[in-house]
Length: 235
Image (tube, rainbow, N blue to C red; front, side, top):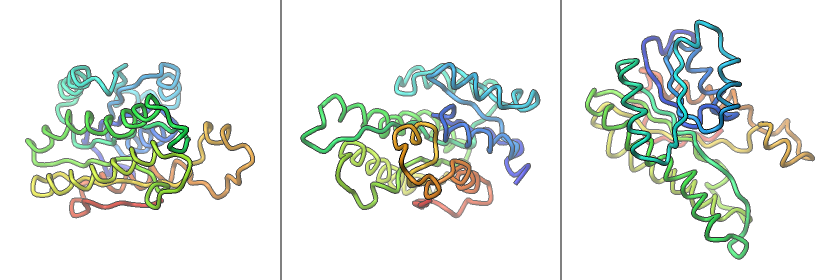
């Protein structure tokens, strides 16, 4: 809904990836100013090119390592200095690696935890205290439908995303009296360029469009969604 987030300020980690761009563009279309810490320069350039000149005035892009607490704290300070507040956090950084237990090296295990779970911790730890201080906030975390009933073949990813779900539920319990909601969106396989390359023979008509995930996020971050918290929204 155009204007539903007029005057609101969002931080979207992972906001230049395939899903992240869809979320960023949707929040901007709904009237929000959006700040994105990014890691891949060409993705940031692609996002900028997709925005109108007027929309670019409401988008802040900075190269930031979201796993670096100090760097992320400086980024958050910069967002508040420019826009005056932070109302919304979408924690969308993540990564995927396959492999059963016996195929999963320690490096892969730790990488999956860092990208999928620690990134949520660092983002929320940097932003949520400001939300609690203002008495308003909307946190949406991107988890995965695939780990709700774990299957074989991607044990490190499963453990990390299951941790993301538990983290979100715990955060919702901690913040529910402070005007801050915390919810997780759980997409099944999404229709992204990377997934099309990785699974060229798949029936993409059964995949979830990234726009549908962005729609769900846009609903959960609206001011009117204040009574929706601790929800796992499967898509």
